[in-house]
Structures are given as structure tokens and as C-alpha cells.
Length: 105
View 1 (cartoon, one colour):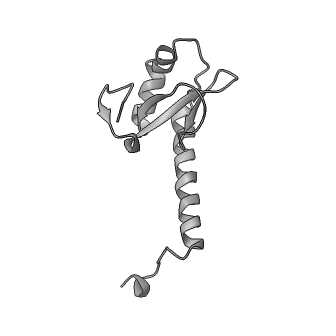
View 2 (cartoon, rainbow, N blue to C red):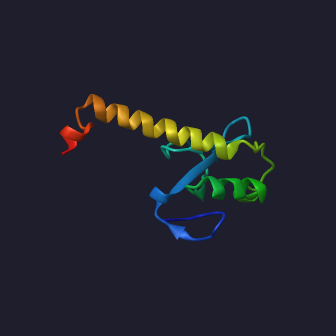
């Protein structure tokens, strides 16, 4: 369980996205939760990430001036879609994906 920096609600980590600061001082989404450093947790929705960017939650949470791009919500969404697509591809290679009306039925 972690607290969302925007809504201040405690939620399971499966419903949140962890953000960390790169060595270049940029905010990066850590979808696999393995990057080093202190993390800031935000609800897994584009609206919540956009609100965090708009309200400077990343600068406040990491207690330093950071470069936060205005495209962070869109970039995070792209990473999530790519991650889901890759997971589906791995499941398909393992024979765990069933598609087609006849097969599913």
C-alpha cells in the first residue's frame, strides 16, 4: 500500500505508478518498480499524472527542482500501452492467449 501524491489516498501498488528522478534530473515513470532512487507514487490514470505535473507535485515530492515535461502524461500512457502489448505478446508465444469466436467458445 502506498499513498497517491495527488489524491492523498492510500491504495494498493497495482493501482499506482511509481516515478523516479533520472541522473539528468528528469522525472521518469518506473513501471516495473525496479529503478533506483526514491519514488513518488501517483494513481494510474492520465488525469492524475497531468494533475501532478500541473500542481508541481514532483518538485515538492522530490524536494528539488526538476525538469518535468508537459508531455509526461502522454509518455506514461504510451509506456503503459507498450508494456501491455509486450506482455500480451509473451503470453501468445507461450500459448496462453486464445482468440477467435470458435476457440473461445
